[in-house]
Length: 370
Image (cartoon, rainbow, N blue to C red):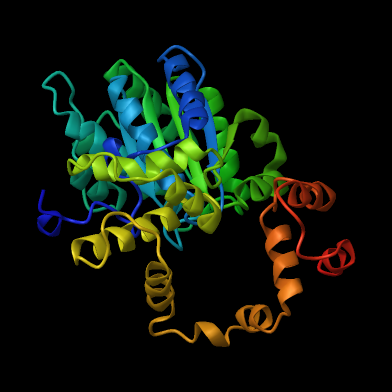
């Protein structure tokens, strides 16, 4: 096989968009699949919140949720929020337009749903409400005006109408949901929508502070959500799958060594985007003839360091300067402590460090870095 003629299958810039590349997350997928399987037009709505740090794989998991929902025959509505979308009227108007677009895309002759352009005209007050009948929300938005209250009753009525018209649940997927979590009004409307309209599956995905913000702003809503925390891969098999699946997609088998997988697990702390970055660099070197296969070498590490520092004063950042100024024993202690963040206590980490070999630092040196 001519490796140089292939496209590099590793994409560290974007979430996973192809199910063939989706690796790990078995437990999380199983939880979401169960919730989707429980959904029905005559059953209470299902609510899931997916949260975690940036680049942990939340959007990829949201994509997997969309694949599963479509496999179940459900209509999926994708809403990707940006700054300014957190205000209730803006948020729910955006949700509604995406919902109408998704339902219109179903395109069956039996369904009579006005297109999104007609809905937007009515909401803007540029067309008669009769042009989107029997929908209520567009006219109610126009009557309320830009400063008016969100017409919740009309929104509930239209959602119930859509679910009944489709005959199956609607799955609403909201990315960057932390943007609405600070507003008690938006959360309250979501709470009552999902408690009074059957047949909805609401999945909110946001950064690590999403759950905290929901709790601080409107703690009662949290009990209605199934919480899923997304973190870096912990299992060796998940890191292996993250490395192997892209290779298999281009017809390459048996090129992922156990040593490289173990090293990637340590280097990246299981972060899927970082794994893809390292693999992208290794594959690129293989294509250029600089390496014989997927080899994790010093040159690969240097290439990634140069890529990350290019055009930036990375070395001048206060945290980087502080780390570079550390003595060797402090760096070792820092590395040991960092390896167990969120997984173990300092005492448990020290015990594990001593179990794997002779320690290079004393307990006193270790404790000074705590």
